[in-house]
Image (cartoon, rainbow, N blue to C red; front, side, top):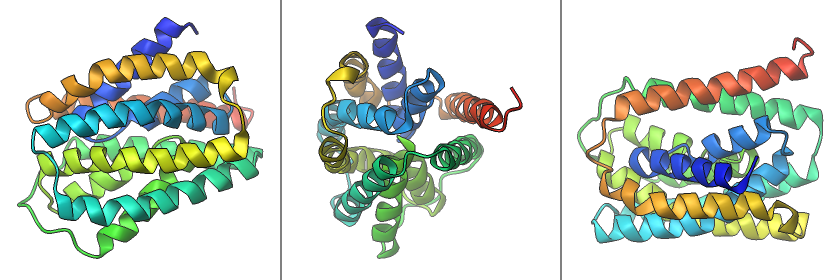
Amino acid sequence: MTVLIYILLGFVAEMIDGTMGMAYGVSASTFLRAAGVPSAAASASVHAAEIFTTLVSGISHIKLKNVSRTLFLRLVIPGAIGGVLGAYILSRFQITAVDIAIDVYLIVMGVVIFVKAFSKDRHEREAGAAVSALGFVGGLSDAMGGGGWGPVVTSTLLASGHDTRKTIGTVNTAEFFVTVAETTAFAALLGDFRQHASIIIGLIIGGVIAAPIGAAICSKIPKKPMLICVGVLVSALNVWKLLGHAGLL
């Protein structure tokens, strides 16, 4: 893969994430792992790039008034703690069982995204105490799977009746701080990222270009076809990898 392909991957993944509130990490890490990049390296590279893309996306959503302060505060600290723990687990247990667990996890995330295409938004509700636990689980899943903050957090919040625009904007904004925590942990645990420079640079360029565009059209783009395509693709790629682990390919 060349830098241009990583740029395209970063652009597409961030367009999906900026408009749907999910799937940047899931999409990018799925393609990287399918291309043979080790799980920990793929997750570390995606999160290093996400520092820049989530910063631009968060600023854009704040300017467009897509952020709920209460929801943000309940998500960000537990999410960062979960992300650091997930980075530690992934970097310390490089075994086939972990790869298989991640494959299964990402298949589930693909199904979550697909199902979201057919769900209906409900009336807005306030952020409760359970949101903090959701943030922790989202951060943990995000670091271990190379993505999952959006599918876990955004899908759950929307399913429980939170406003679509505020949920997407707030989850994307909180993701910047969660990503910084995860990337710092990966850097401390894995060391030098320079061998993955082309991946990170490509993802940053593509993601930064797409971030303000995705935020601007957050409430306008038809969500159903996009969610269906992403859900099917993510699940299919990881089913393929799971079959490979089982020796069926």
